[in-house]
Amino acid sequence: MSDPSETDPADGRRQIGMMDALRQLPSGIWVLGFVSMLMDISSELIHSLLPLFMVTTLGASTLAVGFIEGLAEGTALIVRVFSGTPSDYLGKRKAVSISGYALGALSKPLFALATSVGLVMFARLLDRTGKGIRAAPRDALVADIAPAHLRGASFGLRQSLDTVGAFLGPLLAVLFMLRWKDDFRAVFWVAVVPGVLSVMLFAFGVREPAVASASKRTNPVSLANLGRLGAAYWWVVGVGATFTLARFSEAFLVLRAQQGGMPIAWVPLVMVAMNVVYALTAYPFGRWSDQMNRAHLLALGLAVLVASDLVLATGARWPSVLLGVALWGVHMGITQGLLAALVAHTAPADLRGTAYGFFNLVSGVAIVCASVVAGWLWETHGASTTFYAGAVFSVVALLAMWPMARRPVRGA
Image (cartoon, rainbow, N blue to C red; front, side):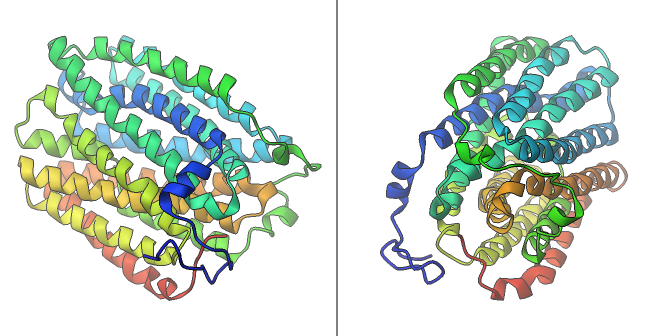
């Protein structure tokens, strides 16, 4: 880790301290973080309970849970290519992104009304389609607003606030489940409120910078424009897909906890624990990525994922599960904001929406494959095999990308 007083040889600027960087971030970054936090509270109130709701109330199989989760998350990532490109062409990132937040909010009542796995799948796909629509233009908007030398810190802060919502949602789910005696549907209705608040905050609290529409736009997916996405960008795309293949849906963390005999009402605490760690680590690692070799951090993230998989493979009791999900959270904190910053750093400013779209298109295909395979392994060979397979793939990925860790991949 570099000392804040040192000069970064990559850009010749004097580095600033972590707290100073936090104070220098534009207000739009903070607002986008709180928008993400509210929507994540809404989503995680539902998603932390949804695997149990499908298995215990609707009678779904574990394979069905894996298929739905993989398809839903993959849909969210694949749809991003269709939202990122219009946001580049129109130069209107806010309008495209806010429509995705609105769709996510509108999907929430369907979970409370669901009486079949089919309706849950439809609601999940609708919700994740909304996420797919909003994510690429929102990330491009963060890159537009953020100062170049604080890009990693900006993505880290947004991710950290997003993850605060990701642990508040499951925590509230536990409290409501205890209060209402395991009434899944009542909790799902509560989730509508923060979803609506998220849309309102985005609509009235974020001002789109003029840079997003300052120049005349051309077709972002023309051969000429795609040719401007160079080798460094496609390397980031490949790394992102590799990470996604090694890390399947977090629904399997919830199911692993249930195997240890935890009461249903308390199982969402597993996601609380993971997301607390994620929230606490996302900003520091995002800021450090502005100061050091980013490929080293990516390698560290894979190594931590290997450790998490091995811990989760060896036992389902409370100590093992909590340690495993904590390591999973550290892995997420290291890698997620970092990969977003790398896309912004390697793509032209006027193609950022398209760049995030293609990045997530490839990752979307990967997560569908990873989650379906994980569900099949769980169903046919048991939970331990699923996590051992994740560890093996992570090791292979780490060995494959290790030569890149020798190259300087610094911030802008």
